Length: 541
Image: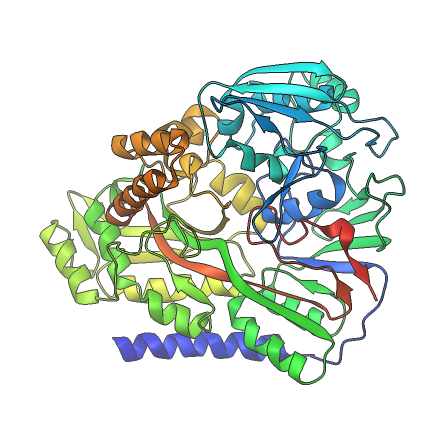
């Protein structure tokens, strides 16, 4: 079994390497525009609805946040004059906006825009990804055009961090309010503003050609000074092997979130004289296979654990990912202060997987597929097309799981369909995705029972995971201020997740990005802020 699995791993890697190497030539670096390669097209350019890493990178150019989390994981003021002042009881935050910040149409930003952004997040008809941060607000008071106070319902040590990310970028009330009213008190991902955004960021929106590119140009009145790079194009290249080939011949300047199996090839290009820098560092990005726990086949924990034992995680990391990742056992990466190193682990053990299924009553049929109480151990795995790492996972998983008596199908979709329909409308049985997290270990939106989007209209508990103890711990983790006590809470959360396995936790990626060697001030950021977090500071020399 192991030899057969390794042979498939090596074959997949060879196919990726051969495909990616085709057409590689010396890169001729051009100054304008700077071209950033995106793995998939976006759905919206409205921060009210965003939940995509690709969208976040573009939105970093168009919009601004109140604060930033920098590459050293420190908070710093951005639209604010200084970090907010917090009351002694931890409930009330005083914010002071910079004066003279202008939207791209010349109108000045005020506290009314911040309050309006909050109101849009809470508007009942707006299908926002999550309202968790916003629901914690008890009161929002405006003192003057640049000063406002927010009071929380209860202390929440994680709450401030969210203001640093794309979901909290400030939108213009004077533009978006009319669209909201005309839409019957509802905005949409595909609305006028969502496709023609106006923000206060360093770049103005120019054009979005679906499945092709988004173009931005420098904003002369940006409050920190006009950016030195005049134009930036975010170009859609769905196939990662094509992305590498286009990067190597100069069509793409920035290859972000590099496929791990491309890392060595990028280093080779650099060694051969290509003028690039290749950044490699731990990150909060993970890859997981989400079980739809609403389905009878996945409601049995023994099935989920057996599939974990049958998949060769470490070999997958070593061979397919070239070792630039770490095996995952729960949802918190090793770089986090809250990481629990003593979790239940699922080393590759097909015999134990088969034993678990037998003991749980999943018996082999004449066709080689197990069944229990009339339910066949049969399911389909979905992911987005053109992602060789996720596709390699599917092929290996299919082989290993069919060897223990499962029937596995593979059905992949273009990214827009996968994320806009299959995931959002819970049309999957198992879906392979990547997640990016913030620096705080809070994961209420993923695991709390109130975050099932099909029931409550918001949230990212796509697995449909319900566990009363997890609910209690997640609530406690948000209120506890002592880090040692919080660590105990999140250790227990990870312990439960590793036992219950609502996901097949696959790995935590290293963050790999290749950029032109003459791109100054590029500083990778491992958080939800994304690597374009300081895009206004970049320059080409």
